[in-house]
Length: 308
Image (cartoon, rainbow, N blue to C red; front, side, top):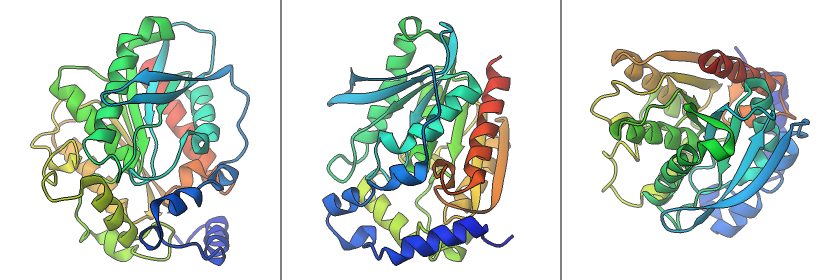
């Protein structure tokens, strides 16, 4: 399928802004240039409650945002890790998609603003995310959460973090109800079909992903660590059931496809859905494409099935 018309128009408009690529400007400039993403995220629909607080992390207090769809005090929960190459983005960008996901799934969503590379490289962002999961589990009663119905989720670099947190949870005998992986980047292999085929022209580029990985890992020391590159795990047996979403014109398409295959090979239940005509990041662009709402509603429906 060709690029969806609204996505082609969005890419053309983005290109006209002539903003520097991530490797072409200082980090603070690149981060400042993401401030406008709240516009493409769309308006936030009504939800019972959105609240903010800080929780203790391994090396710093961590800001979290809690989306509560109902007064129900024994709800499922989704611990959410946002994307941005481990370097960019902030919680406001995700308000529209996560409020809708909370409403559609009936789950309380806890989204964490983990510390970012390059100032805080691996394992710091990963440790922040895993500690957030532990905090949610420990505080489930006061949060109004059913501790047996907690899952993790994330998009892009957040999909990597969710995959890695799911692996460490398994390694520590913590039973998760599910993992949602939205176009995850789960290996540092730039020779895949989609890294070659979708290298440029579709928003996220292969060169940008190489730069993001360099900021996160900063050396080859962690390249085979499954908590950094989840596809490197020796086994995927006993991981939480996975819902994986990919986009046709995404350099990370092959990562999502391959990870789904590896999970299935080792007996993990996988629900895989590829969105044709879409690019990386489409799920949070609620104001750009109706496919974003469709994907969020799909995830909400599947989470509700798993947790009822």
